[in-house]
Length: 251
Ligand code: XBP
Ligand code: MG
Figure 1: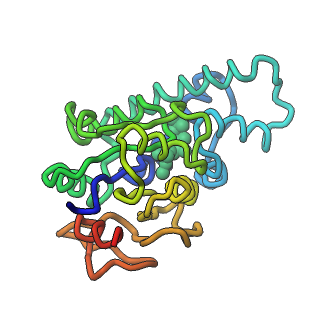
Figure 2 (figure 1 turned 90 degrees about the horizontal axis):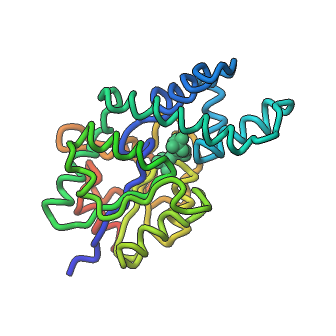
């Protein structure tokens, strides 16, 4: 039996490049909707991405940049503001403006054709995952993923390993039979913290982060049409993140 039994995918930055033109835009739309004069430009957002989770990111912004902001009922305020952001984000995604990254669709299809189980482990809100998968892979695609571990299903978000441990537990799998795909250092630490061999597909926001724990760092999943660019690690002569490469990663 092949060692590779499952692939666990991160979402934001991995399946699709969602942060710059998706989440960040949705946050700003929610701020305006609530009459707040806050604006997260691309540079500030790069700093705020150090914190995973939209609610946690808003709290971090207040603590670091708006220290005078009133704190009574703050938790309720943040939950409501974040819920509005999620509404805007889901609308944005369902307009089809955030395509999957190069090769993501091909790898998912190849896993399905070869009975390799697939799951998701993400910090983002479940509604956001549904919007992305259904708009990019079709209405049935949520059912392709055995587990969609997302958002507040765990208390400790990435870089804590909780979300990947949750996915492994629900699938009844050992980390040694799975590979994780991630895009950020927070995600890499979460996946490796759960004992998973991890491949990083970096992006514009994460390309300068430290990925020393990754088996392989590439600029995309790559596909038969468009080879990935290897940034570090062993690609075993492959030109895309395919099942053969994943088998070799597990050794
Ligand atoms: C990325 C995140 C999320 C998104 C925003 O998740 O950290 O918080 O930035 O989504 P991942 P929410 O890379 O693990 O997919 O506002 O719904 O948290
Ligand atoms: Mg990510």
